Length: 476
Image (cartoon, rainbow, N blue to C red):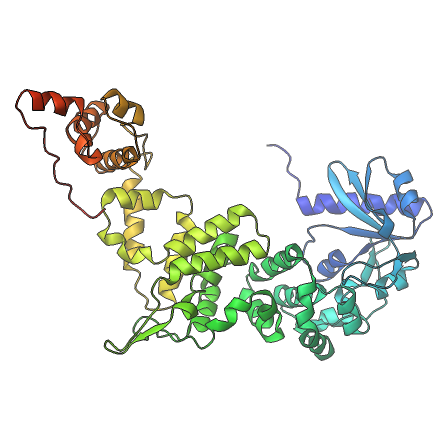
């Protein structure tokens, strides 16, 4: 059997080699930050950062392959055996004027470097060569207590980098820690300043929080802190937006959305997460009450919601693939109530879409969190099983536009309708060969196009009526 290597163990070996080489050259070198935090929690770190007294140029001189990813801040990436480890020189930061980067840095000691970091649990250093832990900020006590605390003055830490407020929520979510009162108070006070941070950085922290299995707690912290209102102000209107109790006994749209978040699988895709968040985003805007029926309605909320979703995700600079998949899910989530009435050809097209797996999951959670009726979900899964016997679900079309031209038909916009109807009949088994499709087109395409074919004109000249178009059954 081929030899397999544990990725985490491999990265740790490379990081240890880097520390050893730096120490052998006379420099202080330790593991720093999140990897130390995770090691103390008995969680294998995904990556390792090294902090050192060596200056950037000294690091570059010691290692054959390096990349100066932030040399002005003392950060050099060292590449060993295709593994990248960041090596940063101990430093103190000057003033922050943009809410993200220091105007200047001064290379300093390990203690000073720890004091400029964000949270105490991320300010720990570990020497893998002798097994000693250096804790200048009380991080080990906070780690043992399950407490997230800013290093020094929390307002100053958040003024230096506004994103740290979202990082506080993320760490509290993922680690299951409590945010200590002074740090939490600083988040509450400074939440509006999160808008100073770039959309890309906000997006990444938001996703890391809500893709966590502990996402509901993250959602609640985002809401309670005021950060959610700053990032996604559209969601505030979900609170108190009543729904028809016969379909949504669980409560208003906010309660429904939060409940759906709690029902997501531990590992979920970005489009599924986002479609849960935004599938009902337009309900407040489309709310109406019919006094005659005594019923609440949200007419067209899926279409308006799809546009709102696109606007929100574009604003947060999500990749186009995530935007398109999420908008598709939001736009179609109400179509699931009609699937048992769909014509077979339409149902096959519906199930053949690349987003169907996430949309099915969305539908299941939507129903399970409200009326509990999973009949359409069960029906669709049975149809997927049935249709899977024929591969592919959507075969190559039997009829093409070239075929219609060959029949002497005039090209135009109507060609699409003819080809779609031919494919529908193919999907339903009414047409099984190219010959069948051509014969059907000869008889029916002229009428569908609203024109006389060569066949029709010849038949008329001979005193015969053109063939009538058979009546199509089923809903379009």
